[in-house]
Amino acid sequence: MKATRFLVVCAAAAMLFASCAHDDGIIRTPTPARPAGQEDMIQFRAEPIENVGVGIVGVGDRGSGAVDRLTYVPGCHIAAVCDIEPDRVQKNIDLLASRGQIATPYSGSDEAYKQLCEDPAVDLVYICTDWLHHVPIALYAMEHGKHVAIEVPSAETLQACWDLVNTSERTRQHCIILENCCYDFFELTALAMAQAGVFGEVIHAEGAYNHNLDPFWNGYWHNWRLDFNQTHRGDLYPTHGFGPVCQALNIHRGDRLTTLVSMDTDPFNGPKLVEQRTGKPCTDFQNGDVTMTMLRTAKGKTILIEHDVMTPRPYDRMYQLVGTDGYAGKYPVEEVCLRAEMPEDVNYQDLDFEKVYTGAELEELMAKYPNPILTPELKAMAEEVGGHGGMDFIMDYRLMYCLNHGLPLDMDVYDLAEWCCVTELSRISLQNGCKPVEIPDFTRGAWDRVKGFSYAFAE
Image 1: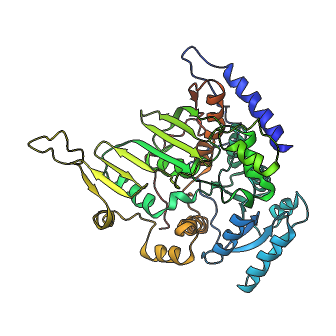
Image 2: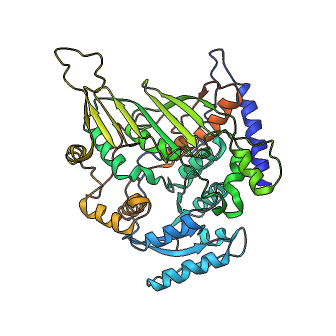
Image 3: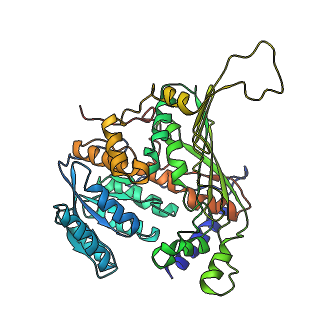
């Protein structure tokens, strides 16, 4: 029922935006004025918290992994655990007890999260629920004086993005997107290389979430993720591929996203999945098997992102940085290509004269450009604790480090809004014949105040 109401709201929004198309063919999306008394959250610093009390809401697979992982992260402790299923809560309470931590359990109703958000022992509400519950929990938590960290995708509509931005600004509480792929070892090093000018000026980037979910559909609570794909059209999961390349392009740190246009295939596999599970014909499946979105920035740069969870092609986040003098790509093999000296005698059959670094040569090259947060000690800890190869641990470590020292977070509420708004904006483009759609300025003019993405460190 909630998903159906959500679809109706989105369809109404798409019709509204379609009516706002100007003569240039771009569908306009309004940027509301900042409410009186609010200030932006660019480089916001909260009061330091020596030992962050974490309240985790949603302890299915993702949330239980966070509980386990956070017991190894310095500067925090699990203060509370919440889930609609009591047995999940108890399982995690028992795990914490075995590691010497006592946490308060909350469960038994759809609104048990409110008790957790009101708990004075909780400083940070860490949200790992299904997608439709992300925003209501985050808003309630900020209204009750808590910082929030939201699993991806953190928001599914423009209105939700604006609600999170406005509430964060008004309450002066951090609102971070838990985008772990920004902490992948390759992405971290490629970002450092880009910042060092190895690729010249980065002018184009690509990212994706191409992941065959056939083995996983049945593992989602009440099959909510397949239901979401059945009732929603667009790039429903953009941030894994999108977030890391936005950092490399300094989005809202000297540049900003301006327009996007999307195209998709018909839904070929989705209806079959529904029919296999229900035994009934499915004629209303909304999401195409493959969705492609192209975006342009104010500084004339471009991004391509893809979404495909329906076909059997190999896992691929694409991750490509294209610069005026070089290139980095992670899939299907990790490689860097740098501009080579032109040969005296040009052989037009030779398509591989550029210098391409792979294997040991690539490791040697990348070792010259360490990312400032990826110390040998932290990398070793991440590899030992794990979590998607260690990037989950680095994400959590950086979040707690910044909260401990009262520093700006690596990813702020504007990152969250910009990376997540693609879901509804891609839907608007698709439902209006693949027209270009304006991307709102969630910073409301503050996007150029900071020049370049950087990490904050304690003095």
